[in-house]
Amino acid sequence: MKIWKDGDKTGVTPPAHFGDLKVLDVVPFGDGDFSVQISRAPKGGGGELHHHDTWSQVFFIMEGALTFDTGSERFTLTQGQAVLFEPKDPHYTLNEQDGDCVAMVITVKH
Figure: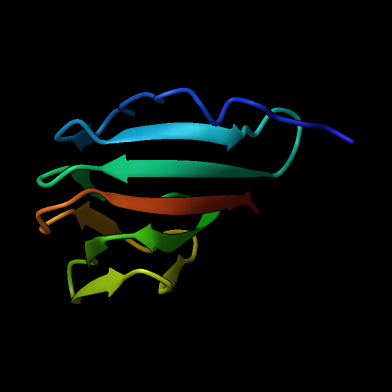
């Protein structure tokens, strides 16, 4: 069993992210094949268009709304909705709402 107690920290802005978006590792990769993060994006915060070669990611919107763009499709998810990006699926994120968006991001290595 492992316990993580970093939920009170503010997180960091990863490379290729902007607008004061902060990501907090709740369960870091470490020696495992998955991670759980909380991403907090204020209005105008997000991540540049990118993909992951060997990771799948689920974004679950806990508060607010987040707009996604895959290069061929653009959509907005709101609280309680989720999306799965498989390896090599491009995705761009942007909070276009007035309030913060809080999302749980689960990443799995393949």
